[in-house]
Length: 353
Image 1 (cartoon, rainbow, N blue to C red):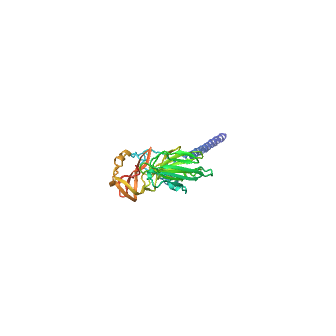
Image 2 (image 1 turned 90 degrees about the vertical axis):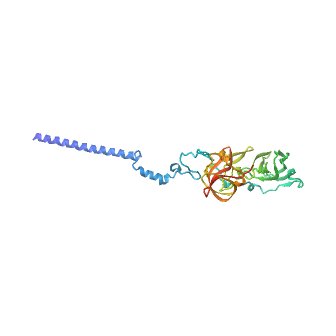
Image 3 (image 1 turned 180 degrees about the vertical axis):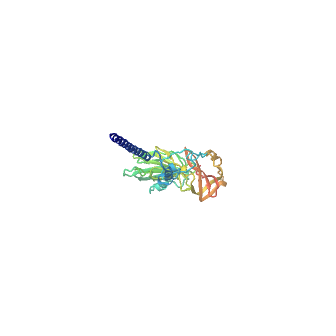
């Protein structure tokens, strides 16, 4: 009897130990599963890569040009890693340009002339190249609230002896092909000065404007620029040689400002216009050429100045395939284009000697 009781106690102990072991195994298994769920949640083992790919391709998070391969607005897109095999305005590398001023802010310089008329005298009996213009006026030139006395003597025909004098302070002018015209102009509305613009017809009908400023003590030379340049009234200019004036909308290759009597330019990014279509107006030279020139030197080998190469354009649509220029000479005149009918060739204009 005692033996049977003892055996029953041993059996219950074994069963209890087995139950406890099963409980512990179940608990340990549950803890391991919990750790795996946390790991998956941290993204170390993505569960649905296909869904993530679809989000990048079509969702709002996938519209960054860096990821989609789409060129930003205004930039020409091309095959990734492909060398175009020819030189263009922006080069073959990824040049980053500073923010260019909006061309809409630039106007003809005549818009900034002051509504002021000088008292002008000259001998009408003399030939133009013999004339001497005496010009007088009064105007507040330095913004101090007081009128300044202005006297100028302008010799034409490259004669020496021309000068500008303000309040008795005289500056002799370098001889030029002066026309005898002089205007007041505000080059930069942010300062207090009004400048004097002297008209120079240039050596071969390439007119210039020469600017002078009275700073309250002396008359100083500011600089000169071609007559048909644009300006924004804030000290910035676009030379007509850097302006695609026959294209609509217009664009430019450089803008500049005067610093210590010199015209200092900042290059603009014209590479953004390659591959875009514009309307062209006016007379230009067009030389049909199926193969795009590799560089400016090759381009110039095909240039003709014959009347037979002249074409009249009037709202003619053309796609710019390339623009050629030197980094140190931003003259904007050498284009390779494709007309609507598929004809390709060189386009350039007579912009001066």
